[in-house]
Every structure is written in structure tokens, then in C-alpha cells.
Image 1 (cartoon, rainbow, N blue to C red):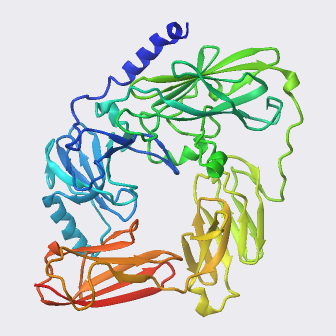
Image 2 (image 1 turned 180 degrees about the vertical axis):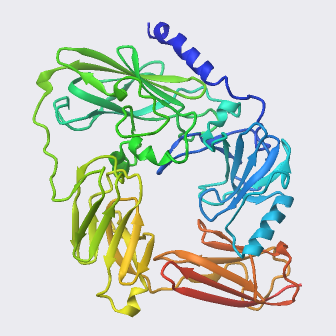
Image 3 (image 1 turned 30 degrees about the vertical axis):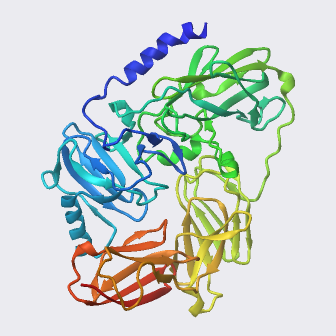
Amino acid sequence: MRIILFSVFFISFFSNGQSNYPQDYFTNPLEVPIVLSGTFAELRSNHFHSGMDIKTQHRTGLNVVASADGYISRIKVSHWGYGKALYITHPNGYTTVYGHLSKFAPEIEAHVKKLQYEQESYEIEDFPKAGVLNVTKGSLVAFSGNTGGSGGPHLHFEIRDKEERPMNPMLFGINTADTTNPIVKSIYAFPLDDKSFINGKNSKQKLTLAPLKGGDYTTEIIDAIGNIGFGIETIDRLDLAPNSNGVYNIQSFVNGIQNYELDFKRFSFSETKHINQLIDYETYTTSKKRIQKLFKINNPLSIIKPLVNDGIVEVQDQTSLVYKIRVSDFESNSSWVTIHINGKTDSLSQAETPKVTPYFINANQTTNLKEGRVSVDFHKDTFYENFYMDFEVKNDTVKLHEDVKATKKNFKITFDVSHYNEADRSKLYIAQLIGNTQKPSYTSTKQEGNLLIGSTKKLGTYTITSDTIAPTIRPANFSNEQWISNHSELKIKISDDASGISKYRATINGKWILMEYEYKYNTLTYDFSDHIISETKNNFKLIVTDNVGNNSTFEALFYRK
């Protein structure tokens, strides 16, 4: 009966939703079959994945080709993020993005190297005009790599619309085999106010999930009253890889009427931060499970389609409801979850009294907290909801609640460090204490006179700490006074265990050289193909500086013909 009721609607939904995108315009940006390690809009830390991650057979250096005719409109080289990245604008108004590259095609590489040497910086960003670097469909533009915030060799590939909003590349026919239904890992039920209860409790409940034949699921029958919502932990797996990927669409229904939808076709970068309000943030920070809420509260995400009552289920006494969730991948493989709800007033009990502190945070107001030498400033709309905050200062450490409340923007922590002697102040920084070991982790810090000011988006415990130890530098593939005529590159290992590396500068015979920093491996690399060395005897000098200004200098002599 379920198939009869829903099949016509969903066939229509998916066919109409995917028919407005050109299917033959873009081609595979690699010369190997598409196997994905990551799909569009996957839930990532503090953001949605903005493209697809195409596997490169555990290798770097595969040919990356232009997915369609166009011109290179942006080149960005960064230590973080996409690493080495190209952006190609196409005549139809779309832009394709290619990230984590190892290097660019020769003409583009020469253009980039020229800019890097002119600016004496590895990190550059350039916006070539149309006609400067034109490309044709299938032409070589780069080589795949593992640069930036990449966890292994792959190509990050995006398609963006005219407003620079990333879209699901599968809509354009760039796809891979998928014949498996999505997997539902857990279901949660949420009472949404102090008058709402689930199985006699006014707190979030994890439901017992039971698989059925055919890949669907059910849960135990729940007794409830009031306004409740549901959340789901779910993944999809493609045919050619074991990775846990994101799903394409989630819909929910109450007694056969659709009341909510998450549609992962497109989003904007300005809204991706709201992922932490889409998921149950407290569950994520305590257990790393990403539970997607199927109800909308204070969340402007465009992927949310709240059809009835923002997805909130109103349960009245002496009623019976059937709540269904449909999870789909791009190929319309679907898994259903069925939850039976009995409305019972005898499920009422005393609501748990929330912890009250002297520090009430009104999300619609600016708040300043101050005690001793510490002050904290939250601008209006830093948080999504009002709550009582734990705020406690002991010496040079401040506890700002626990990291269980999602934020929209950075807030400021200020320490008065006038009680430190002047010589020591320059080595101080603000650190968040992480995990059971309370390991200090550097927080973006600046000094203004006697004030130490940190900027962060996470609640937690913060303290002042000192870094008096300079970074370490050691050669990786040569030694002092060595002949290295057969070397293709110069490699240096650098590290800093406290505040972290801030900047570096390298010269050979007094001239700046380009060294590529790969933070994942603590490696700086100079490529001798830059052809700036004409001497046999060469003096190499490297200065590395950490985030509080400690610096180390390494010098060596090498010979080369």
C-alpha cells in the first residue's frame, strides 16, 4: 500500500527536480573512472561539503582536465582549504572548481610561479581576465594532488551557479554507480518545550531501531504528548567504494502528509555555517554523531523545506500518529523509517529544571561577561537560542560553559596581562584546553597594550599560556656542504609544538625562493626546476617564525652543477 501511495509522487519529484540541468555539457575532470570518496553536501565539521571528492587511485599527479570550454577566472594557492585550486568560468554561466592539486599545467604553472616570485609568497590569489588563460573541454589544466586540507590524494570538484552557489555535480550527469539503499544508523526523538514529553521524559530520547526486510526500519512505539521532533543519523554507500557518504534527500510525513524536507541540491557559502544548528550540536561534540534534525528552529538554511509546522509534530491526547522518514540517494534508492506515536497525557511528568546561573545569554542581545582580569564579549546573534551560561574565572583560566551550544559567529575573549612582566608578555597567547588531558590548542590571539585578545567560535575552557621555544628546523634530504647535483628538490622539516608556525622565509644566495609548505607533513619543499640557481656554491638560509614571534634560523652550504 505504501508503494501505491507514494511512488507516483516521488518519481515525479525526482524527474522534475533533475531535468533542468545540462546533462552533456560537463565531462569527467579526470581521465580515470569516477569513484567517489565524498559526495555533495556531506556533513563536515562546521560546513557542508561543497563538491564531490573523486578518488585518484591512491596517487597524485593524474591529469586533471577542463570539464567544459571556458577560461580560468581564479587561481588560489593556500596552505589550507583547497590547497592549490583552479576556477574555470564557462559560457553557460557556471563555474567549475578543481581543488587539492599538486601542480598546474605548464602555461598556468608559469603564470602562478611568476606571481609567487613577484609577491615573494607561496600563498597567492589571482583573477585572470577572460582571454588570458582560455581552456577547451578535455584540455589539461592541472595534476591531481593532496594539498591543503586534504586527508589523502583526491580531486575536489565543484560546479557553481552564477551566484557562486555550489551545486550537486550529479545533477549535471557527473555520476557513479549506486544501487544500495541509504543506511539509517540511529533515530532520536526530541521534546521541544517544557510541556512536551516522550515516554514520560522531557529530554532527548534515542529510539531502538529495528531493520526490516527490504532495507526499511521501524522503532518501538512511543508514548508522547506536546510538540516533538525527530532526528536521524544516516549515510549512503556507493557501489565502487566503502566510504560513508552523504545522502541526497530526506523527507518526513505525518499520517501520509509530508511535513518536512532536506533537499541537498544547492546551498550558499554564507549559510553553510548553520550546519551546526541543523545537527544536534551537543550530540556531535560529545559523541561525534551527526544527528540531522527533521524540524526547523532558528535556522535559515535554504536546504530546509519546512512544509507543515516547521516539521514539528503536535501530539494530542488520545491520538495515534504514524511518522515516516524517507531517506534517498541521488539514484532514488530509498530507505524508510516508521515510528508509531500514541498520544497519552499519562506520559506527562515533571519537566527537568534547567540549571540556572547568574549569566543569562539572550541571543538577541549583546552580552559582556566580566570577572577579575577576564572579559568575554558576545555580539547579538552569536547564538541560536537563549540559555544560562556557566562562567567561571580562576586565575588566568576562564570556563565558558561546555562546547554544546552552536554559534553563528566569533566572540572575543580578553585577558588583562598587566601582572606579567613586560619581557614575558610578548610570548603569551590564549589557548583552548582540549580533551581529558586539557592540552592547550592555540586560539587566534593579538596583543593590544596590556590586553591579550582571542577570537573563537567555540565555547569551552580557555587559558593564558606561554611559548618561549622557537620552531625546529632540520634538513630532510641533504646535509651541510653536500653536493646535490642530482636532487630535483630541497626538503626541510619544520615544526612548532606550542603556538604553531606563523610564517617562513627562505633564500639562496640572498634571493627569495619559493618553498611550498605542506602542514600535514611539516615539510617545506623547493623545486630546483625554478631555475634561479646559477652558482656552484650556494648559501641556503631559512627563517621560521611561530605565532608569538619566536623564530629560528637555519643556514647551510650546498654545491650543485
